[in-house]
Image (cartoon, rainbow over all chains, first blue to last red; front, side):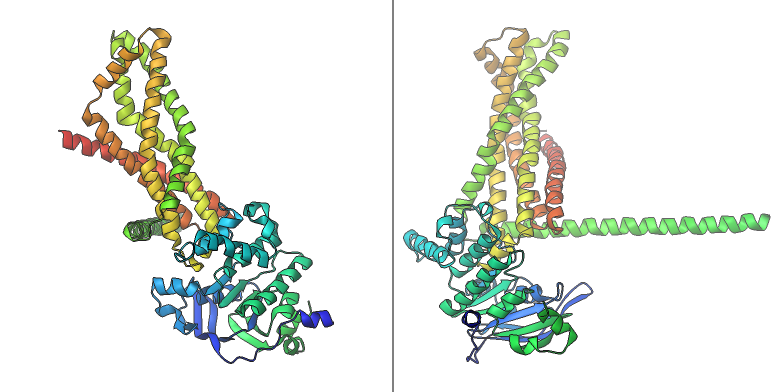
Length: 256
Length: 279
């Protein structure tokens, strides 16, 4: 129990919002995926978004980073309105926001070293030695130092997720977006990844949005949880508050 | 009885009309989809030219793609070229011998290979090897969110992936065609010497005697267009793939089929344009 408490997210005291979504709507054809979403992510906070498949969770974070355009509403990230940004400004903002994809999205044609160096290719002020140093540091942070010259195909599912995380952390982002970080992993590796997310929050003081179905991951990482139902934020609270909810839909998640 | 026949005819007419309407709706939908794709492809090509001239330039990636497209295709293109020359010679020899025109064999082979067979066959082989590879690779990158990952890391994936590959195919296909033609001449020389005895200098003197500047230049220029077509079509099919893992196979297939068809169309246009200019 004591170990569980050590490995759980602490309460956030900051009131400064680093992400603010206001009345965001997104449809694909006749399918309304996001219906009037209002959401705030506070500085240093881990916000977990729970919801069934197809409830719009991944669409939410893709809108946030500008991979998808919302039909209505505004998205403010680090004081900038995403829809108003020009390409160069959006690219600059994206360097401050890390995105861990569900599949890891590693570049298959590159080695682990090249995967990690890729986000640094525009950093003209860094020498090759400095880049190598950053790569080695990022790999050490996720416990993958020995895999530096391997290719992604030679890595296990958990290692690929950790490598994906190392690649996003190399730019030292202020905000991290995790799209189902523990999907497809065994319980032990899932726990390792969840603890790594918590470690990243503490070490880099990042604010994170974590999309997941995995309740142990939510319990370990969440400062606050939002439950999505059919494109709307249906319930909100801490893990403890929501686990006591009497709502049938919410309690279904916590019965796992 | 007559009333029943009339009712039957009316119903038959109604059914025919419904079928006709359904058919016309299908044709309209098909045409509309075709024009949508043409418009979409035009936008894609427009973006290619915009990104091509806009810095930064991905020199390392372009060189890497040139190596993959050019060097990695040398073996296949070389063997095909050699066999092409050998077979063409062996097939033509009996017919030319019948007319007592065997001495013209090197001239005929040279013109056929340089003007038509070399560029078209090499381009078709590259459409199969390089085009399917690019189509499948890009579609797979899309499915596994690698393209999105590039975008969120602040890199322009279109420039990095598409522009570099199209430049590589545009520059490397002409080089491969030249190599293929050279090996086709060697194949033709061996073919001629299977049945008769022609010296190496004499054979090549006849080959180069037959070739005019107006044979070589238009044929060489069209290979750049073939290379561009292979690159841009394969990238378009792969980059816009959207059916998950199934889409990877579909993109590879569509890249080869469309690029091959476009190569024939471009070849036809090139012949028309060349003839118009030369006449």
